[in-house]
Image (cartoon, rainbow, N blue to C red; front, top):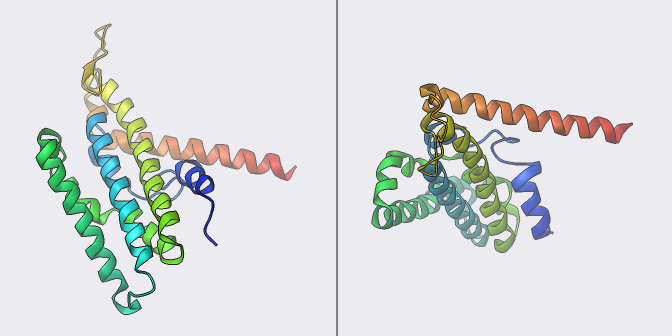
Length: 204
């Protein structure tokens, strides 16, 4: 029996966030989070691909032979990724150029294949759609938090708008990939420490 929608949403956004709890999708999180605009577009693209590919694979789960399951999953994911890439090129060409090959590399994002294998293969299409889409939104939320910190410190802007009213010196290191690594590490540590504290409190 599939989980209730609100349970799925809470799980994917918070308690089992794919980046902070499952440590998936880290590579793209390091690459695109120096700008909130890029992070938002990338995150929504991943959400779209994860949700629709999970729904499609769930609908086909009983007719796909096991020996070619991974091949079919990759093919379906690739179709949705191509659609996202072409849409960005048509309607958001500047952001498409900034993201460059990273849009095409959505197909390699572990979150997409992970939700297909862990949830879509054993649940109906609509719950699979919700699970995949909100797994992507959980990923998007982390990207936006990381990119907010990096963009403010590195460029003095938020969504491209200047917020450096006091003229502070921007940090070049903030827009380099290692900065994202340290910020994500701090977020993972904070969430894990909070979860551990809750566990200790409930066992007393």
